[in-house]
Image (cartoon, rainbow, N blue to C red; front, side, top):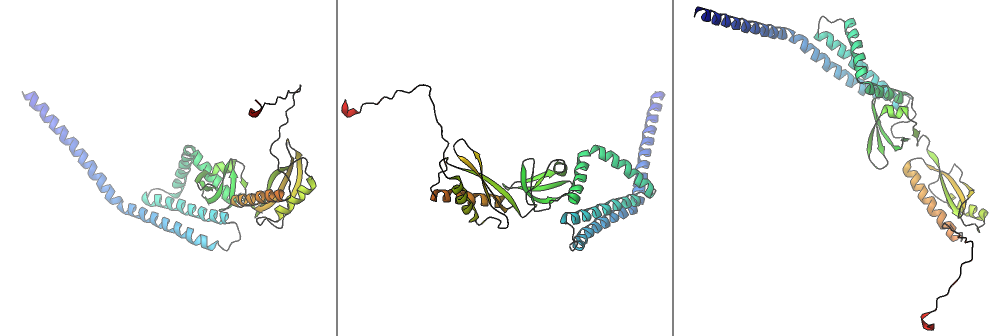
Length: 305
């Protein structure tokens, strides 16, 4: 009986000791948190100041660089890099304020290790990031240009550090990783105010080709959507299966809408001019040849029966 009571008392003492240790630990943690509150407040204030300074750099940097003669993408890149530098320095200062024992050298060393780990974990993100910097710095297309890349045709609406926004000609918005634009050939459709458009038509074999070329040239020159400082070129191209093929080349506005509008006007003008001149645009002809003559049989009409 005495052994039972002794073991119970020992259990109660052990429970009270554990409870006392836990309370002391919680108290020390709470006291440490309270003592660290000024550092936490300083870190929050540093973050707030960093955010405000980054906003000021973005706002005033954009205004200050407006009069600079460089491309808009270069100006935007400089402003973003300055903003990134402000954030990196602000985060380092915040870490030093939050942890008083942390020195700048230790912070930079830790940042290097973290950057290596993050770079390995987020390789694609950093690849798009550096591709975006190179696009903003070196590539010739700007916001507002029409580009074509791997079947994607559209207008560049925004070029961010990691991705670009392309508004396709059907109105859909496509978000493209910058590494895609950097690794693949990109055609800038609007790098010049005008570009050449080519079209092929045909005339019948019994038509005077020189006359057809003259009629087509006059019809194309009368169109309003042409670029007047560039010549219209009309040349017989090939002997087609049913016609003499004639190639028409002219210059017009470089946007996709401008090209479609001009193509429609030229097709309409050429068709109308050839019709007025009595020049046939033939349908595909087929000539069937048989080895033996085919017998011709005439059906008797109903009145002769």
